[in-house]
Length: 203
Image (cartoon, rainbow, N blue to C red; front, side, top):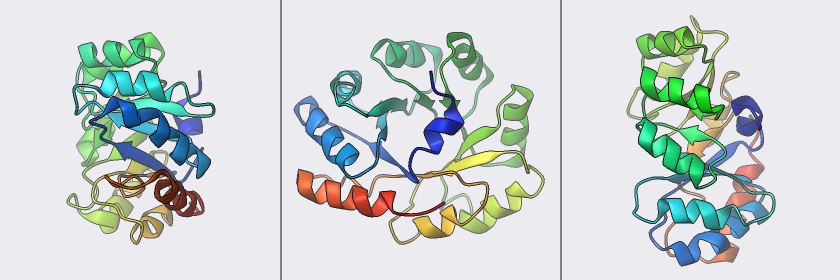
């Protein structure tokens, strides 16, 4: 199993996907992978999310994870559906410990120094900075990287194609999460083009 850093380094952008129709899942994953974005975060915000993970796992080259995982039950369901990594909007000891016991890479959300410290006490060094823009944006994360030089981040929340380069310019940012690469109603060709542009960003 890949570790969380290797997953974060696979592409500069991790698509954050909210999929309502499972029949679109495989085509969406194929379009994103064709554009160079192989790491896909399927949020557990819809009733079909677990089925979406199963469908996307059929796409060669796709590395499919589950997002919006908030407790042990959701973690176990996501892993049973084939999720290769877990993303959470926050950080709790029970969730982190459960992921560690299962050997599943986890990227918990943090927005403060105290949350980073609690994560580090649990042996973590990689975090999702969330919600990125409303938590102070680039200046806030830049300030946090000072006392936490060993931590690595994936900012997510409100990031766009225009602002992603500003985040990726921070040395401790390995990737960003974004939904702009797969807007609802877009064709496969449009999504592949957006994914190709996102994959060309440098961190």
